[in-house]
Length: 453
Length: 41
View (cartoon, rainbow over the protein chains, first blue to last red):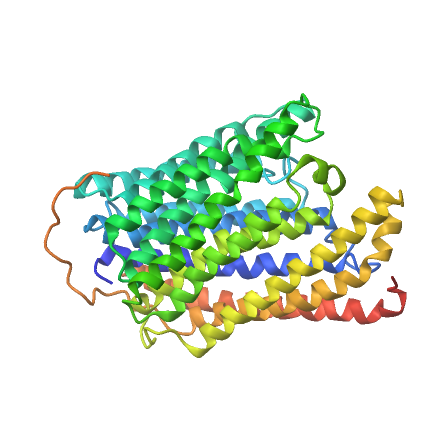
């Protein structure tokens, strides 16, 4: 590590790892409820386990994003962070918010608005944490007077993510209005501005890991960001099918969300092209696995599986079925979980002692078990979803009768989710088995020339 | 730095989480076995 303040990232990554593990616990408990009568039904019903599962996902990924940013910004701007104290205060507040929100959900304390269940006091803490984060990073860049394109894309992503959270602070009595604005936050996060955050990390990793030229990489980053925005903003309309809004949203949603995979094709080609043209310039091949894996798996999960059911004439059958779970799991894992794990794998040899730069054997097992497990989970949701659509939507079978017919797919889901869980457990074990060694081991270079994005 | 002292508690917490993950897997497998005869297509 070249700057002492980068050590803040270790603690963010550590919290993210603990929350990632807990997310899987509640995921497994949720899947088990599809198998048969559940002894935990009255202690941990499905609505509670599912809310905790999805909220933990959002919280740990955001924790990882913030940690990765605190790692990346000092290197890009070539200066120490503005304030490590603020970064630790932010982490404390953020963790407290996350833990109390989960405890609250156990007692049904939440708004009931899907994916935005956080009660208002928690939402206010989220806004405060985001403001602290943006102030800290913004002041660091201002102090350095060095602002790279990679940082610009990352920061536009974070500022937009904070702004798009504002509609979530309001309560809407009308359910259709509530759904309409929910996707301004959730869709425009995950299929809009979070893609910019992912693009920023991807560019940073590819520039560091390959011998690719920064100018070339950053030029293509603009193209990818452009594609994300062209399709992603109006692609929000694919959440507006049959929710009580005018029907003109159907063709708008169909057309623009069908264009959304273009940006993901671009990202995969971008990653592959960088390595193919420029070769590997860094010994950390484990981080390279996660980086290329993220670009390819997000093309599969977010791009192809999203496209598979985004057109209105297909979605009229698949809307609200396990087909959505198929797409959601693969997309979120490929685009966001894997890019966070890539940043952690890249930074970890510098943050801990006794670790090989190339990555450990456990690290590679963690990678392949997670990839295999998530691929199997995606296929399980897909087969269950296709059968569910046929039985429920075409044959007219009742919801619970159809669920009994597709139980066998949930046996496959639990088997493959267990494989995935073993992979995550190995990653968490590998993360914590070496104590942090938070010292500067490489002197920072001389001040860089001023350069604007 | 004082924050280094957090490593011990966090490592213990990670072990607790790993045990919870193993328990959740065990629970899911047990439920699958218990309900196996009721699972049909």
